[in-house]
Image (cartoon, rainbow, N blue to C red; front, side, top):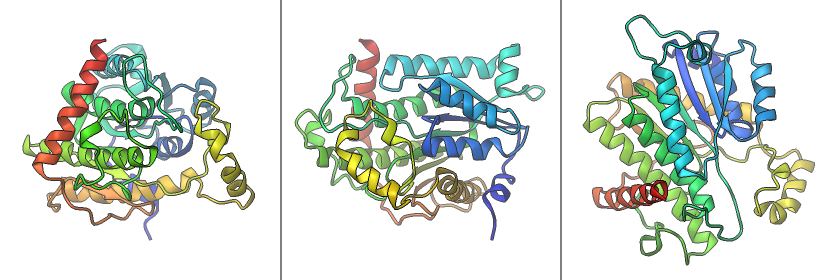
Length: 325
């Protein structure tokens, strides 16, 4: 059986990756696997926890993980962050060389992988200063903005892997669980809002992939369900859902439930590398994938052009309105 290290070793180097929401949990596990590729791999983790990021960077055997601060609930901040990343990738400065490694002769540095796992949970609606629901801003809008900006700025390689870590199992690309009459979720229950979030993520994953392929790209877009992963959510006092989940989380901890992030991201990367190879080699009929916790693909339908257009138009209308405030 092929190990995750063997799978990742097949990827072309130098390998540069940006992992957003990677100071803990799945994001951290994803970043550490990429770091282990070798000294010719360069990983940037983005988030808020500086102390956690320092610990992750210091423990990397090849000293190839660097940290950039990012508050994902601010669309203005996210857009500025993407511009900074693109500028640094194009720069020949000492700082850029330290973070991303030296550019290949005559070539511009670009990202080989983008992993998005940042999020925020709450039991009631919280509105950001930019007018977005906070959970959607962190778990959805920021992710779509990062993908759009990095594509527009030419910061992603033509054969890059873009991974959204959320819940492809629940996500329904048909649009049946999308709340089209309340896209800002101002009057929608938590249960329906969760289904909306997962489904719009699946739909946008497909939309980016379809449009990328139409434009001649061969990037791989994946929405993955990580399963029940052991994380430090017990220590996250920022999330109001913490209070309600506390009994369940204590029980799961007592019975040692959940899978270690490093194990789960190993499955994820093995599946992602396999899908990417099919896409790059021209052996895949599509360049998107809905993936389960073991790195296997769900049999999900493709969203109609009408559904994709409705979700895309709302998504970027909301993002652009937020950045204009």
